[in-house]
Image (cartoon, rainbow, N blue to C red):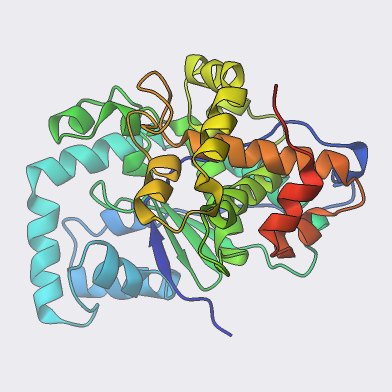
Length: 335
């Protein structure tokens, strides 16, 4: 069955940093090497050229991604449409576009470190999930649109969404502070990894209760932490160190709020949004809390479950569908 293409404006997730010995991947014999296809550079190289001719060349390099980029990311139209060529000409002449592309290509001129980190992560992924194919990796510029595009056999990341939280254009176009803190180069590799896991192991609700998605987020991010063991917890979470410390300090209070309100079994969409979505704070906790703090709780439950059940593999965890069973077997009870 073909994987459906989907576009992700990634929210940040909570991740763990340690694991039992049996959950450490042996990658000593792996020869997998990740290289990133620079669609961003090849696409921008069309500027000032005969567009139909060079567009055909770009299509030969990225036949899987170019149609999706033109039709769904920037929404210019089909690659063989004369109107698309006209739109591209206007696009390459736009001053704001030139500024954004120049900055993005400058920041990501050298991606060897990113490739090295992805190589390590996907060697671990191959160890834990030998039947899963390693995707092709691309980079593109979306005009501050979708962070990651996931398609059949590939991931493409929009590098203009990772220019640093202080990048002047972000504030000028009205991107909120709580979102800008995750628009930094250090989030590139984690976002690739999380997008891949979410696409390979998609969320399939069974009961519609909050607990299902809460624990699903925890599963994805627990496994992502196994693939990226050297990344700081606060970075993987998308929190500042202070936000991370707040969650650690008030974990038991957050849990009591969820239990007292019977929120884990709620089908209320607004409760789900308040606990799991990006926001300045998690309103069901306090205005001092960071946003999506419910995801933090979900991670802690999964972490507790995996510690209590050392024989459960990462693959078995991701395939488990009984959220109530996981909660029960986790023994989770923060104090």
